[in-house]
Length: 455
Ligand SMILES: NC(=O)c1ccc[n+]([C@@H]2O[C@H](COP(=O)([O-])OP(=O)(O)OC[C@H]3O[C@@H](n4cnc5c(N)ncnc54)[C@H](OP(=O)(O)O)[C@@H]3O)[C@@H](O)[C@H]2O)c1
Image (cartoon, rainbow, N blue to C red):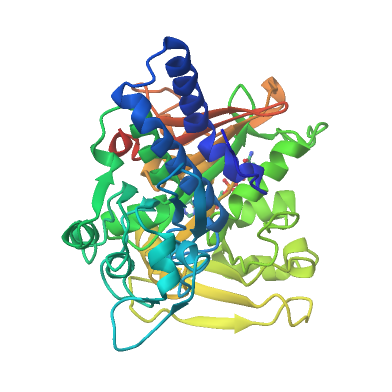
């Protein structure tokens, strides 16, 4: 099977399981001599859909608040890929148009709802099949409608993995294509386990868009923690002889994964103990602006100008969330721009005064963060922060990195502490795992708080 090289190892992890299952199915069908079965007939199309997912990975982390849709177009003669594309950035053409633009000229005309194509498209795409990770959009947004554009073409069939939950699109993209005589198939409707794995992989890659749209809330929460095999996230003070729980390559991988979100959030305690940068250095996202939010009552961190976040971090603004000043929820939260404690112009530092009440403080944060374009946040704090978020259910997806190490008496703070009442688990807690990935020395388990929606 042809696999595109993907720059980011962290991204490719999210297609490991479905790639493996597709290979297994291919192997089974080849060796059973069952080449004419309905599933064997489907297999080449599922492979193209996997290629569309690989395209989608390229834009993941860059296209927010839009989903990083991927698209592949295949020839009617031999299934050869004619063109592929992905959505790079909100406001840029969607994946379908990126792919089509490789086969002829595509222009915009403000008097139409669709992209204007040239005659080359009509000859190149006669009888071709298109594979997309999400239903083509029906409406004109920042760019013209994809479904209306595709409806002009002599395509045989459009395959897509997920229905678009956007009420402006849901089912309408499909209806436009069918109205133009193009066959349409949505893999969500196919009961085969491998088809369902493709659908689930698409949900994973587009999850920030899907969850915020489906649940009508502004922010998607992705929590990360690293723990020893016995559940510790930190060392007792003075005992950090080995100083890290996971290996350098695992930590580099976690940093790449960070970039899939629009910003990062942590606590003062973690900043003071670890003196981290909380940035995207040495990743494909190094050029991306990556705001850092820190829960810091009284904005006390401003008293520590030597911290690396102030002197070395170049990834974007730092916002201290000060829950000491405001009582009650007010629509206009007072904010001030303070000077960098070292007197430098960069990075810009803001202090957001939020409610003393935690629920209200989060609500205020959500409102303001979404106003500044944050749709997904990476949560990376110590054991008190992590376990309290897990207990509150304030998470959508989790990356739990387990270091192949037992810390025992040297350990401090377990990730599940908040789930324990009076030192005892009152009832067992089950988390729904999504992926289990073996790393060089450690392993990664991802969990989903919406697992059942995937199956
Ligand atoms: N292994 C890892 O993945 C990892 C990651 C980061 C840090 N660490 C380690 O963790 C240690 C620091 O841990 P820690 O327990 O002292 O600090 P922490 O868990 O990072 O932060 C504790 C602070 O977070 C606040 N907090 C807790 N839940 C919150 C919520 N839902 N919303 C807003 N604020 C909340 C707490 O406030 P209240 O007291 O008011 O509840 C407290 O002030 C360090 O040793 C560091 O190395 C490990």
